[in-house]
Image (cartoon, rainbow, N blue to C red):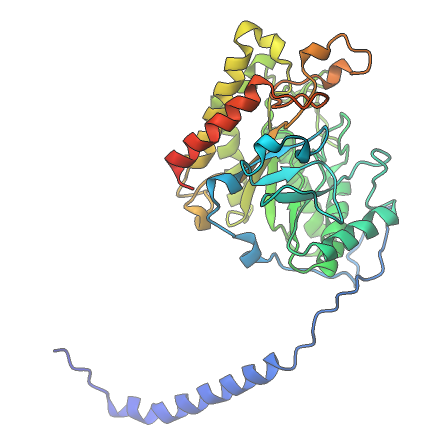
Length: 404
């Protein structure tokens, strides 16, 4: 048996260390009982319309809530979710219990009835669209605060494709830095446990990472700290970036005419999809956000199924299952989320739960630009497309393979 020998000098130190420990315990105990409870009443809402040029002396910075940030591991169902551009989840009872995340591009005081799935609150950021401008419309932001207070611990995404010029955020990096700071601060004052996420750019290409680099730089310049982020989101649409043409366009505020030149038939290219995920996770790690979870907050097919010909249904079904399997299993010991087994992606939202199909091509009440592939249901009849039944059949297979 190994014996431990205590030198005489060590014996003389023991009473001193013991006294110090007692004093430290007493100090911390006193401090714990002297902390004032957090005030539940939201502060008065400031609505600046011009980005500040210097660091304000009265702003409040909240550190990311790391314990809220890492509710891992998720079950298979908790990882999978949907975007809903048409109708409501309650219109599709067959999907009940088969997904764990749901977003409808809005925020709500009273959450929708989606069973155990989590509703994603979203603040839109484009000026003069959807009637929602968090800087120019004090009512919009004050209502978001009220919704945050009424639903503690909710996930809040600030903007949908905030850099995209085509019907989405259309904000420069410098504008978005101010918007994010304003929303983050107001939401945290209403609910300290709120989980605040950066809105997903269309795809993690070089141009869009440059846009995000400028957001981070502007935030630190204005507020003197690194941008606090509880959760990162990104879209993984595979679209061309060409000025003035269809696709993702050029991020607002960047001086460029062309980025990636993906073609419409690349929508299901898994090599590109996987490279996007690795690229964005590397960017997160390089910027000090490796510990954050990552949600792919929109992906799927934006091209009509008819474009893919007779094999369209099979192509979309194969891409859905292949991409789900990838995100359930892809890890990287250097850049993956360390509290989730180094998985690259924690959760995702398929686009879309429901959308008009090509059967509505000649319907005068349906805009052709709104006919997308990848939908599970017809939003008008509420009947399932083939992909809807495929999803229902696929979920048990994934649970059996990857666990509950």
